[in-house]
Image 1 (spheres, helix red, strand yellow):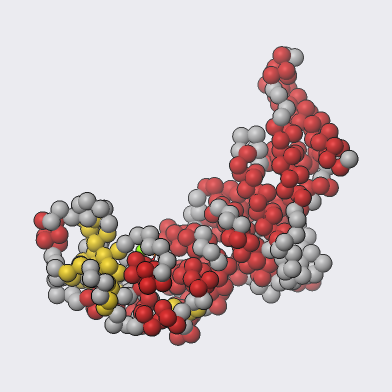
Image 2 (spheres, rainbow, N blue to C red):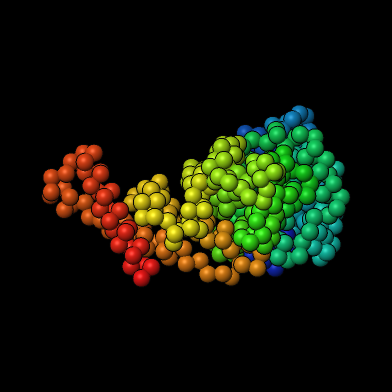
Length: 409
Ligand code: ATP
Ligand code: MG
């Protein structure tokens, strides 16, 4: 039996960047031999094993054939006769199809090293089209390595376009898609993920609500970039630059979906887009079964981001409603994430990336003022039940009035 490192570990070592996880392929072995060596099998469908000591993944060399729609629609064939070359050809990209033995000798039948040099993401074989997830994977690698100068090969983009047009993307499960989307959003240039998906027509299939933003104008006074799609990309770019967490990045991507619903004769204005967008945001959330914290923040940011921008002009009563909507008393972190998303939205505009955003500190101050209202004295005055709630609200409102007066003095 021969063992090789494959995939990301080889690719990233050759690129000179830190390797996180190591995938290995085993050639010339049977399941029985692996079990006899103490390897633990994982998953029912794949001939994949975990090393008894290191817990790292070892997969038997295999070939695969498409036998139906979606991910389940694959037949695998693993046997000691499957060669390294046969295993490598089923992989997505040439740069992911390089094998390395323990002497660091490389087996590179599909010229992955050449494409690493040339900074090209290129599919290995036409079998690429058999798994639609690869469209998302390529877009994710494009987002990750854009900073190194990588681009998608034209012929690969063409295959991705055909895959998108075929409707196969609809066969992806929410779980597989979300895994790629969430990882892509956490890359250095998440906007490239969206750009590549759009360039091959996959965005229209996966998130038509985001795709619809391209070509929709906004008022130039607030949005020098004009186009709503371009704005969304810039907001994502800022979110990555400012190292925002996934929740914020997801909310940034979806915050302006309502603008895609504005009738053309109302352009470039988008009255009530915050409210109109909510059903779209919820639909996208559900389509990918996004985690609850991502879902919640996206909906709240969608509804309230313009409140954030107008923070300094808001009446104390509106400020209070905003803070109540976020349940800032029990969920201070979520409000902090809202503030970040608003700030990214404000910076994601052409030429305004370095602007100051005094709204952020103002909102933090308001939250602090409202949270500073003590309940104990009200209890001591004998307030109970709904009356207590009303009394707390009154005190919070008073605190916000004072806050606004002091802040503007
Ligand atoms: P990462 O740094 O994200 O782990 P990776 O390239 O190692 O990148 P993995 O998902 O760990 O990605 O997969 C390991 C290898 O298995 C890939 O490099 C690729 O060769 C192959 N692979 C994984 N998923 C697919 C797929 N859907 N289609 C084809 N090949 C795949
Ligand atoms: Mg890997």
